[in-house]
Amino acid sequence: MYAVPDQTGTFAVVTGANSGTGKETARRLADAGARVVMAVRTVAKGEKARDEILARHPHARLEVRRIDLADLASVKEFADGIIADGTPLDLLVNNAGVMAPPTRMTTADGFELQMGSNFLGPFALTVRLLPALLAATAPRVATMSSGTANYGRIGFQDLQWESRRYRPNLSYAQSKLADLILTTHLAALVAERGWNLMSTGAHPGYTVTNLQTAGASLGRDKPKRSHSVLSALDFLPKQQVEQGTEPLLYAATSPDAVAGGYYGPSGRFGLVGPTSTARVTRRALDTATNARLWTEAERLTGVSLPATVA
Image 1 (spheres, rainbow, N blue to C red):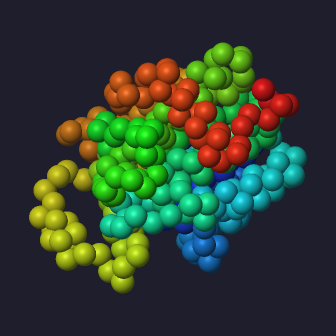
Image 2 (tube, rainbow, N blue to C red):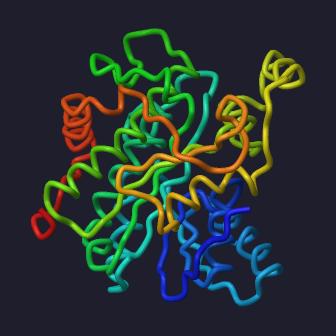
C-alpha cells in the first residue's frame, strides 16, 4: 500500500471527490495532514462523502465546494473562489470524469459531454488556477487519464462528434488521450517558462467504481441490458478503489514522481497491481499535436494563460 508522505500545510483541490478514486484521494490526502477542498457537482453527495471520511479520520480538514466541469461558468466561479481565498494552492487533482454515456449528450456550453467534462472543463480549471498554483512553493497538477488513451485519437476535424456517428468508447478514449496530452503539454510549458510547477498524470487500470455504471445510465433509467450482460461476463483482472487510487496519489505526492511522469498499475495487462511508471502513448508525445490541442482548448473555452502568469 502506497503511504502518502506527510501533507501537513498542504492545500489541495480534488475534483469528483464524492465517490471512487476522488473520494479515496481526498481521504488519504486529508489523513496525511492536507487541507482538502472536495470539488463536487452535487453538494449533498459531497457532504455525505465528507462525513464518511470524518467518521474514519476525525482530524481531517475537508471542505465541500460545488463545481460542474460540464459548465464553464461553474468552473470560473469555483476557480475565482479559490483565488479569492488568497491561499497558495499546492495541489490540484483533476480526477472527475464521465465514461461512455450511450447516446451523445452535451454540456452547458454545447460540447460533447465526455470531451467537455473530461478535458475542456479540467483544462479551463487548471489554467484559471495557475495564479494560485504558482504562488505555492512546490505545486503540482495531477491529472487522471485512462488506459483507453492508448487507442484514442484526437479528431480535430470533429472533436465534438457532430458529423460522425457517435461512438461512446471512442469518444471516451479521445477525451482521456486529451487528458494525457494536458499532462505532457503543461509539463512542456512549465519547462519552457521556468515555472515552479510539476505536471503529472496517472491511470487507475481497471478499478471498480461507479464510473462504468453511472456513464452507462446517463440519459436512461438504467443501463442497457447488453451492458449488464457484458459486465456479468467480464473476466478481466480488476482491483478495488484503495489500490486503484494509488497511481494518482503517487503522481500527486511522491517525491520520486517526475515532471511529465505518467503512472499506473504494474500488474496483469496494466490493469491491476502496485504503481509503476506507465508508458505514454506516442500520440501524447507529438509536440505539434499537443500544441494544437492546447490552442483549440483555449479557443473553445475562452480561457488562456493569464498575463500575470504568462
